[in-house]
Structures are given as structure tokens and as C-alpha cells.
Amino acid sequence: MRNIPVLTVAEKTLAKAYENALIRLYNEGVEFETQYDKPGDPLSLDCTANITILEPETDPMIHKAFPGGIEDLKEYVMELKGFKDHWVKNMNDPDDTRWEYTYHGRLANYGSWKEWKDVENKTGSHEAGFSVNQIEHVIQKLIEQPFTRQAQMITWMPNVDLKVYDPPCLQSCWYRILEDEEGVQWLNSNIRFRSNDAWGASFMNMFGFIQFNKEVIADEIAKRTGKTVKLGRLNWQADSYHIYGKDIERARSMLFDRLDSLSFEERIFHFNDDFIREMYDDAEVMVKMKIANYDQSHQT
Image (tube, rainbow, N blue to C red):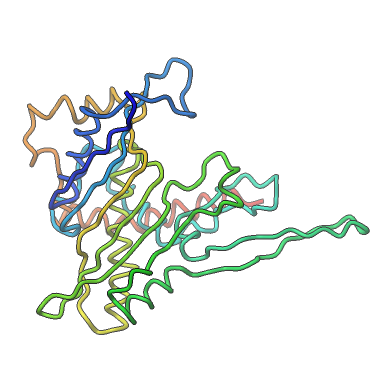
């Protein structure tokens, strides 16, 4: 085979788009090695994917076939809102083994660092070269000119990311607003990943950015303008959309082998059902405790 398949999926809801994208990848993806394979791991399935969710806030949103639970979804949304930004390492400290980045940190505090050394006194330090709150700039651009083509945020820092073992998968977020005849504004978005683990992460990623788009971008625009702002279509672009070989058997047992025996309704949850929403909202307290316990146990 000469070409990596480019698979396109468009569905009304998140759960349906996620399932169909996985099925297309399973049936049409190409086998690949990865730099993360262990000896004996099967080859991964890979493609380039373009997934459009036409109504991101419409149920059914939650698919049961992802390796996580409702609390994990809440924790990821909180991470995208900055609750773990303090877990990121000092880039100029070779002994600091904390995270290389968080997505929120790159979006809300994009910047560079420079190091200087006092050779004579054998001392050194570092200082920020610049820092940009891209989230704030995007919100302001969309308020001032909803049809702008310039409301975007990036994560990639080539001075850092070309050299690290695990650079950001998320690359960019792009936004534009359409207004309907009733004056309702619809926030459309393109989210691009260079690498997206279709089985292990993509559902949580997509769910998380739907909530990020709503709670961080759309709701803030509505608050400042007094207008009604809802989510229009979300276009999810993944340069490498893949299932790792080690995960294929689990994906078969949880999804692919159940397609004929379970109805679609049996394979999903409705996010706005009272018991699911209550589980999701109640998880915030547990996630905050989990973060606090981690912080305490990792004090130096």
C-alpha cells in the first residue's frame, strides 16, 4: 500500500460519530508500527481521520465503549480548564520529571523560556521570553468580529517539542461564529490532533473539547455580549487516528464483536439523563480530592 487512508465521518451526535469512526478505522485502516511498541505487540491500525459532529450538545453523547468512566470524563474536562497546570515541569531543570505540558497551559499561557548563565560565578537562572493567553485573545476576537478567520490557538512549541519524548498531540483549535435569523450565535470549531489514540483517548478528547468549547469559550462570549451562544458543528481532524495493536482485542470485545448482539441504544448513555448528569457533577469533589492528595504525596 502506498497511501494512508483518509476516512471521513459525519454524524449528528458524539456517540454515533465516535462509534462509526472506530468501525471505519477497524475495517479500513492500514497496519503500522509505532515508536511505542513493545516486543511482540501486534501492529496498530491507522488512518487520517476527519470526523464531524453536527450537534455536539445533542444526546446520545456518551458511548459505553471507551476505557474510562463518568468520573474520568469530569477529570479530563477539569484538566482542560487548568486544574492540573501546576503539574508541569520547569523546562530548564533537567531533574524535574513532571509533565512536559498540559493543553490548558499551552493555550492559556503559551510562551518560551530562555536560560542565562553567569560563568564567572557559576550560577544560572531562566526567565520567560513571552507569554500569551490565547484563550482570551480568541474570545475577544470572536466578540469583536464573529466571522473572523483568525480565532485560533496552537500548542506546538518547536524549540521544545521537537526534542521531547511525548510532545502535544493536540495542535490547534480554530473557531468561527455563525448567527441565525433569530439572533442565536453558533460557535463552529475545528480541532486538530497530529496523533489521536482512537481507542484509548479520542472519546475523552472529543467529549472534553465539547465541554471546553461550551464552558470556556461559548459561555464566556455569551456572558460578555448578552447574546445566546450555542455549539455548532465540531470538526475533528486527526493526522494519525489509530488503535494500538495491544488494544485491538479489547476493542473487539467491548465494541466490534457486540455490534450484532446489542442495539445502538444499549451501547450508549444519554449525558442529560438525570443519573448520568448527577454522577458527572458529583465527580468534581472527588477529582479535587484526588488532585489534592497527589499534590500532597508529591511535595518536595
